[in-house]
Length: 186
Image (cartoon, rainbow, N blue to C red; front, side, top):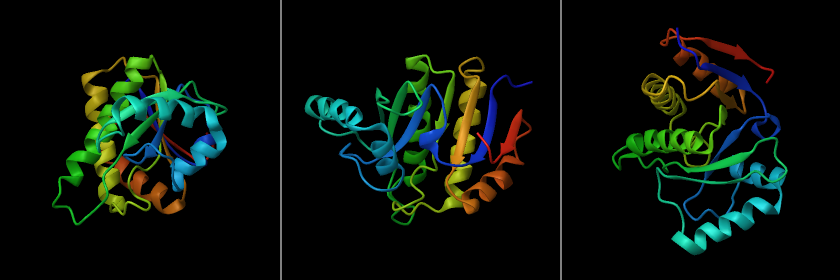
């Protein structure tokens, strides 16, 4: 039996207490709209201050990669800023880059000692990644990682902002015989 609980919840990712919260960031690490904007608004300026230091060191963050900052005022210890791909039709390695963004987020979480991690629906907003395909990639990547690292996490939360994404994730989760939970309440 799998030790890690995987939960699908609908809600505001910025209000859920976790060790590490994943942010759907842009490659400039410059803040933005959607989840990125919500995390920066809720977390306050401390997050951007840390991102400024990272940008000075390495420029931005390539698509598929992830960097870590503190969480400012968020109910988390760390924020993992993952850069997912912009969907341009599926012929520019978008699927592989999305899987890499999830995998690198999980690796950064392990490096920080996080036991509970939350994910938004990376790349499915303004970046236009097809939601059903993104959910398949997210779940496959997460469960592959759990199988490789069975003791890495206690809980992984897949936080859906809307009912459409939540329903897509519920449907995809049926393919995984796991210790999963479905809830609208974090």
